[in-house]
Amino acid sequence: MNEKTTHFGFETVPEDEKAGRVRGVFGSVASRYDVMNDAMSFGIHRIWKDAMMDWLAPRPGQHLLDVAGGTGDIAFRFLKRAGTGHVTVLDLTEEMLIEGRKRAEAAQMAENLAWVAGDAMALPFADNSFDAYTISFGIRNVTRPATALTEAYRVLRPGGRLMVLEFSRIPNDMMQWAYDLYSFHIIPRIGQAIARDRDSYQYLVESIRRFPDQDSFAGMIREVGFGQVKYRNLSLGVACLHSGWKI
Image 1 (spheres, rainbow, N blue to C red):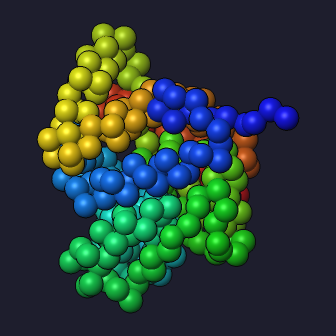
Image 2 (image 1 turned 45 degrees about the vertical axis):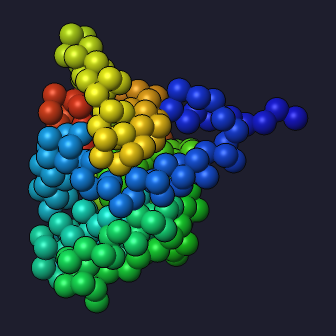
């Protein structure tokens, strides 16, 4: 019997190994994850996440499921925008959830937050449970992204919103070349210097290159049932916001 395989960066691995490897990557870098995000993106990831909230437009009383949201960046932004509401933060890696709970915002918003260790491909929630689903720089690490999207559709209420923030492709060959040069030669070195973990950031760079381009991923969102699927490039396509509705 042929064993199903997937990619882990540029490496081909059995499907049942990927989640454990991803857990290892994020467990290793959890304590320095936020610092690394600032260093790698020169702080621009904050602007991207604010843009995500601008488009999502949180409303009072909404219930958000934030997947791969361990350190709370999206959850805290959502609650500040909504004023009232609730966020369930789900992450594969317990160490990332621990870092999120340590943050000052977590204490201030404790009654509006739940922290759950779980798998995006098998969400431990009932159908039609959430008003919105977000995943920020996480879906490319899922073994089967289409399964995660199917689960997102299942747990959203009718009229619910999916929003995905992920690294993507720059539609200009020369600029993509310069970005690749920075990614492959500089980011792993920053990872070594700040997080003392070159290999994990080498994987993260490779995983970005293996992720589908903007139009291909939008097609995957449509295929699982979402309507009004649109995307917006950020920073010329270095990152991209995808939106869809459960109609």
